[in-house]
Amino acid sequence: MGGPSGSSQADAAQAAPASATFVRPSFDQVYATTFPFVWRTARRLGVGDSSRDDVTQEVFVTVYRRLGQFEGRCSIKTWVFSIMMGIVRNYRRTRRRKGAGHAVSASVVDPEVLAALTPDPLEQASRAQAGRIVHQILDELSDEKAVVFVLADLEDMTVPEISELMNTNVNTVYSRLRAARREFNEALARMNERGGNRHD
Image (cartoon, rainbow, N blue to C red; front, top):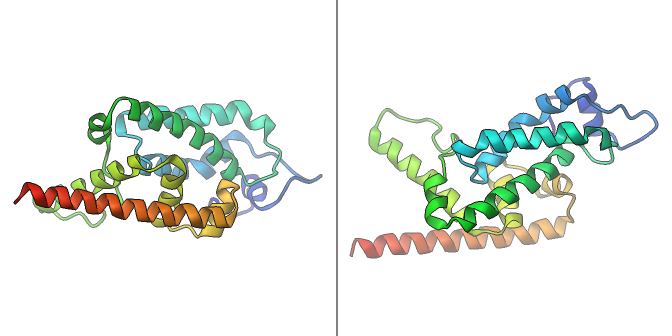
């Protein structure tokens, strides 16, 4: 579940717990291994285009400052993830204070939603709207539920993988995921109902 397989020190740090042979990866190795995941997950949690560079930079500035504290007691991806989530939580909290209208306007389309994009402008608009809807609903979920939903249903990670990444009990992850899916579907149904009523 970490970066590409190979013999790098970063991969070794991901695979092995702290021990006498632990070798702390360099910042460059950590950055190369975790940047795509950080960028993708921040985006899927609704960090908009205008803020994503700043959020990602803040994550890796923090990683750089704290790397000397990393002792290999968890994977480097788990360690970076915990830093990222603290920063993303602050971003989500600030955006919620600005109001739902701001959150929707700031939401951006997940490139995966635009996969297999056709030249048809109507199709492009439909996919863009789908991306905004997903982000709007995720904004309504708690941070814990939004994260497990994104990791399971958008990142295609298994519950044991999520449990390891979040350093959380498997049963807790299952419970949060069930609740997140239920709340997501309920919010989507409410949106569809409101949309239908506007056309009555």
